[in-house]
Structure formats: structure tokens, C-alpha cells
Image (cartoon, rainbow, N blue to C red):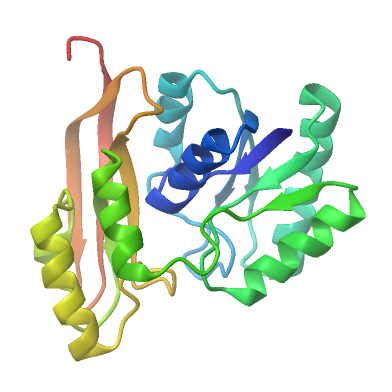
Length: 229
């Protein structure tokens, strides 16, 4: 089945594409909505402009639109516009997304797919957090944390590439502070710099870190595909 992917560049949307392909689907395009608000309930915000490098590395074309509102209904209108473009241009039959536990997101996407006669595909749904995080690493996904906004997560995590030992540390912290180990509640966001879907890894040349004592952000300032690796 030809699928579009709701794509943020983070571990969940990337791994959902990986699993969908393993299931025999063809992901023909990436759909990225550039949100201007940190308060979105559906969309990621930081570093989205660098998803173009991921798109190039996967050789999957990307369709983008801007959203100036954090209103869910208005964001869904933008997503509907993107899906209509994808249907016309790439003849997609379904939408794959990286939702894990959020029934709110899943229901919104399912209603939209039904409206457009598309099949929703949710390969990560109900994944057990610890197993999922370790599956990512065992599948050779290299991802860093780009935001943190939870008790127990400080600025040392910003820009950190996650290892198996980090997963153990995060599991301990999640049990102590009550955040979701796979961050689906927005406790942190991630960016994938290499995985089996890539022809070339991403090299980050320049970045900034912002930390206010509780929330933090790792902003990529300059990056490129690593053609020499």
C-alpha cells in the first residue's frame, strides 16, 4: 500500500516508516507541518527545517505547509490540505504515523483518514516503552534529545545521543519522576541523525542550547549530509 508519513524527524515518525516498510508498504512521501507554536498537541516544533536533510537521505520527497496556530482543528485543516496534495501527486492510499499511546491523536488522524478515504497505519501503537526504546537502538537508530520539559530531565540531556545505558538511566528517572519513558507526553523530543533508512548520516556542524532551569532546547544551527562516512 502506498503511504504518506506524518513526519517530524524524531524517533517515532522515523521508526514508524521503518516498520511500515518492513510490513511491505511503500512510503511515497513525507508530510511535515511547520508549527510556529510550542504548545501544539499534534505537531513537533524544534529543528523541523532540518527534516529536509532526512528526506534527502531517505530519497523520499517531502511536502510541507506552515501552521501559525496551536489550535488542533486548524492544524488538522493544514494536515488535510497536505493529504489532499499527497493523494493527487503520489496516489497515496493511507497515512502512517508514530503514535504510541495518545488516543486523542490517533482518533483525530483516523477521523481525517476516513474523511479522505485513506487507511491509517499505526505500527507503534501500544508499544511497551522499555522494549521500544531498546528496539530502536538494536535496529541501529541514532537519535538525540532536542528538548526536555520534565522533572528529572536536565540540560545534560540536550543534544545527547541515546545509548542503551542511557535508556536504563531514563527508565530509573521515569519511575522516580513519573514521565513517559518514550516521551510521547512531550517530556522530550528527539531528532534522528542516522538509521537504516538513510543513505547518508547527518552531521551537525553548529548548534545552540537554551536552558531556563526546567525546560531546555537543542537548536541545530547548521547541518549537512555526511557523504564521507
